[in-house]
Image (cartoon, rainbow over all chains, first blue to last red; front, side):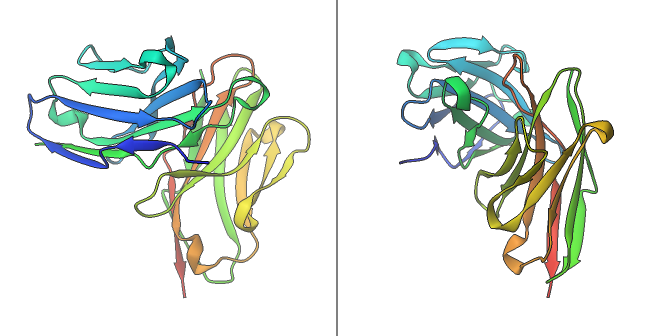
Length: 115
Length: 114
């Protein structure tokens, strides 16, 4: 069974540019989460999808971040325009629904550097 | 609101020595508790979790953790460290009753000395 995959693995962009991160969850997982780790800080929750619906987006830092999950499969996280403080590692995770929903499986992360 | 504190951002032990990584949590509702590990250039891997039932939880690679409600702790231990245990370890908490988001501690980087 394939794990959670994320693309790209690394991205270097200039301030003001746009970047789109992609996450493919484990097949059949209805729950998809985005997290971010800014250098030197803890991993922080951004948002949670159940299928294609946003269940919780309380962690989204501002309106420069837009997450979508069309069709309830893969998800994209767009940052537009990127700022220096957006640099960090963006993790995606997925989990089943039902009794095992608490266990989240993480992808390898996308390392974003904004110059 | 939930929070997690990991005592010590860096821990160094000798190969074969006991590994003890400390985690204290705060939660107003019954928690689920997790330890994740991140090896260099890899994603987060689940080591073990506590949901309900037995408070001593065994995980992969010889690690275990004990949920102590009275102390609001979930410390991670391994009797004998291996060089391959060098990694960053994260303690996390989520809410049994509702929100599934994980709240993480700051992480502890474990170094193993030969």
